[in-house]
Length: 251
Image (cartoon, rainbow, N blue to C red; front, side):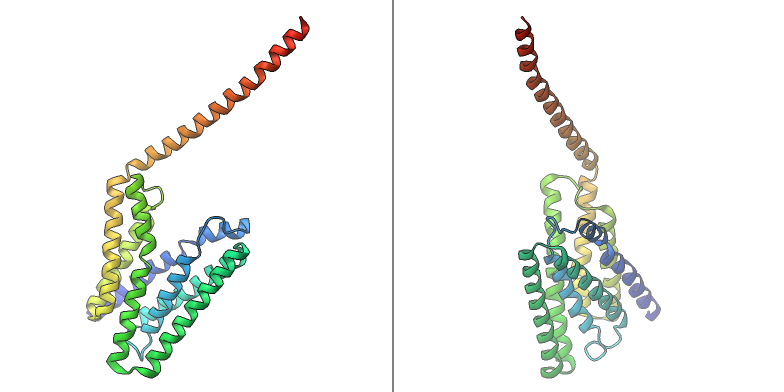
């Protein structure tokens, strides 16, 4: 059972790392264009806060024998800090100040959380407090996937919900759910149970609307084609009076 539990944790770490690194293409674009464009930095702050609490929860004096949780959560903190720093660097001044303010608030929350759990609580009470807070902020991180799922239902297209990310979210949830069950840790079970359910829902939506993706792309391509034809028609119309004027002047 210990080997199975360890294997689930290793697999969960591998898939979790992939999910943490998934936004790299977005941030390469931000750095290349030196602008955050229409991207929002708030999801990365929420994820950073969740990873920070998860890292604290994985410490031996909070929940013993959760080293694998500590490792992947600590890596997540470093990666999300990098994303937030890049966002602050290239965002417009007003947006940058907003993200800096939210980052400061997140830091205050983490420090308060750590101070209370370290000095005011002990033993099982400490683990209970940290576990409840971990589950609360884990649920908040699901807001972004839920908004994407609502968009899929509304547009009946999975264009903005890549299959690989949906599959990875499901696998990450199922591996950590198994890890939590084998560890008999209710807090890992709750948060990753919700993550698994969300991953299943995304895969169901992909099965329902995946066939519409190519159709949506064709419709967009047709719209651009119609726009080009309209522009061509407008150009021809603007040229006709000039030709008539030239002909009349010759007469």
